[in-house]
Length: 171
Image 1 (cartoon, helix red, strand yellow):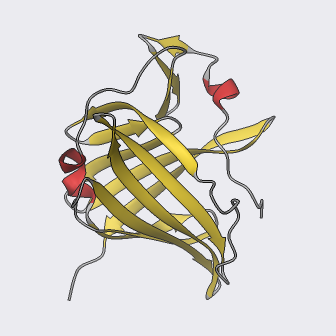
Image 2 (cartoon, helix red, strand yellow; image 1 turned 120 degrees about the vertical axis):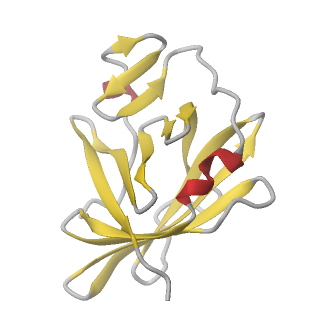
């Protein structure tokens, strides 16, 4: 498994459509484009426990409801009964918009990024049922299903991967 996951804006900048750049389900900011106005309350539908299959295993995300201008989430990939890696994720309000930031950790919580480094995704577009961050899309399909799309890899092997989650019932 690759030790680093990055967004390749070079690949994403190949096709431009109305100030946003499309690569399948993800967008990226065009040169000079700024993030739109948004607030964390617009993503309240993301709160909850989600589970699906991707990257050759079971993926889970848990997102706390919006509070204090942010949402915090965790991600876990497991396969054959063993954890492959974790992520700590936040979506927070910055400069009247939103940013998604995360850090990766091995199964033993040894970090991938340097101490003060995060993987950042600026907001490109938001609507009632989707948030398009630069190389990372979160889409509400229904109250019990969300899809996420993220650009992974290193040049020249960059690809968009989909994660299809179902809400885990509480109780």
